[in-house]
Image (cartoon, rainbow, N blue to C red; front, side, top):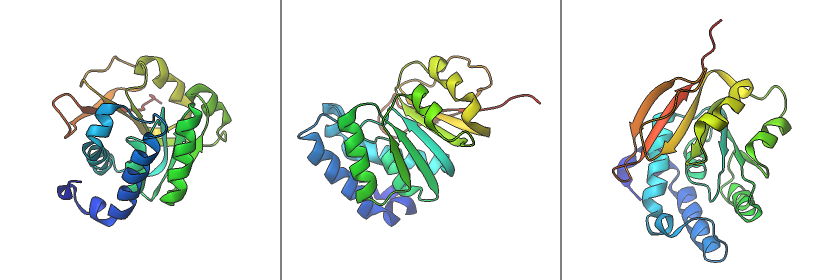
Length: 196
């Protein structure tokens, strides 16, 4: 793993190593991540840590389509002040996420559902300061579902292969950050904003 990522990496190295080891172990029995992610796992973890350093997660954070935990688990490891809500419908991936949250003693809960149903299951007062997603569907279809669950000026962080995103009402694009892994990896943030 890249030591150049700063104090977040160094402080949380043990938990990041546990995550990497457990993900590879589980993946040998259960398909959690694809061959590209397995071959470049350390780079994927480094990228998630870099994203956390850029985004500075705090408060309530939602990650959906959490899969094998990239980028959410490394982000949760290096952001212990944030509470992560991981939404995953696949039971095998959900079981892995529950396991790694326990193993790394993360401030996180794992919800076994699809995004729309999970949003209805959360307490009515729960609002998210940050929502993350890596290549899950079309943002213009699912981002509007978040409107009633966002803090004022809350952000949606899209991990994707392009800096482009469709216009979405109340969620203007606010930032594009080029991620360190490869030529076409971007973190695009949208900021929730409603005129008063």
